[in-house]
Image 1: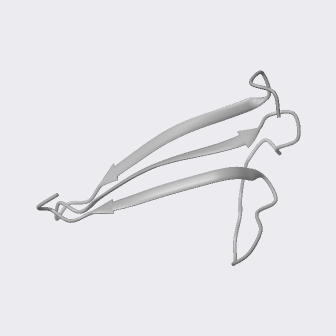
Image 2 (image 1 turned 60 degrees about the vertical axis):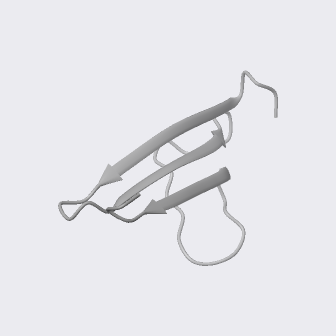
Length: 59
């Protein structure tokens, strides 16, 4: 995948009780569908990478 085709997105979420999630995912914009949806265990169909970190309210 060349850099022009790779798309990387960062995301984060913080819940009302202070727990939070931060992550990054990437996909190939030339082959991915307009809406990316993955489910179940095993190899993904659209995502090339996914990293997720969970944090407690104390960090």
